Image (cartoon, rainbow, N blue to C red; front, side, top):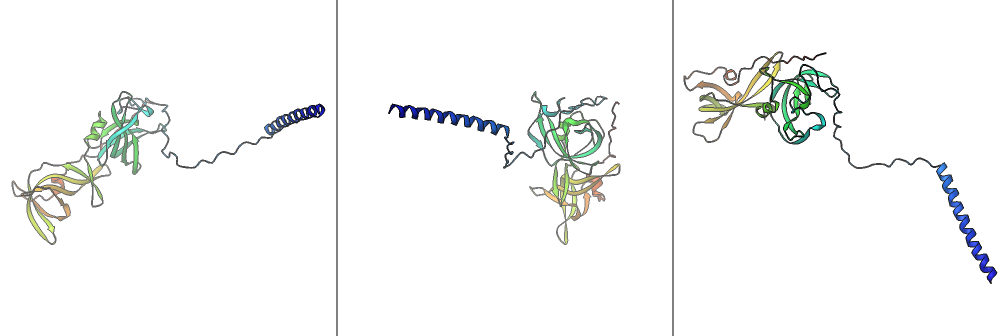
Length: 282
């Protein structure tokens, strides 16, 4: 009995030793011939936003032209986008712009909207300008911190306060499939022969309050086209919109003389298109 007990114990020990040896040999062989694991398949949504611009390698472009001129001296990732800004505006600017590849171009742009950013000190500055670019003949986005020089597109005067110019820019509205620039007017009362219902015209006294017009560059000049006049009709409490193609005649209340050119009477005179020289030290 003792004999068989000893033999059973020795058998169990031998079996355990053989098992551990087998495991060690298997692990060694598996390590030698191990294959690289296949990459896991990733599903689901991901961030499609474009990557931020790389840190600029050039900040000073000479002649005092530097990144961050209109963003309190801050540029790149140091700016933190915040809520705010404005849509449906019109602000014609002539700018010198440094793109992400450090190339400089002089452009005339019609700003349609803008967003805001905050500097590390908490100052609010312009961030991204969405505008029609005459150079590319398409809508483009312009980082405000990359605008090296900006001037008023009408006068050519340098803009020291870009954000202030954008805040005071006129609004725009959609009218007859066109984008109309809206501007307040103070021309005094006029009398209009207006077609409220075809085919008859009615003469009414109107106090114009604002106008809507389009503006586009024609060569070195700008062409403005009057689209409508908003005004208060005598005896009415709400303003009326008068479409230009329904106005048969307009007369000055003071002298009774006919106003033969409504566009010249209501629209501000527009100087030839301004330009900003692209001057950089080499």
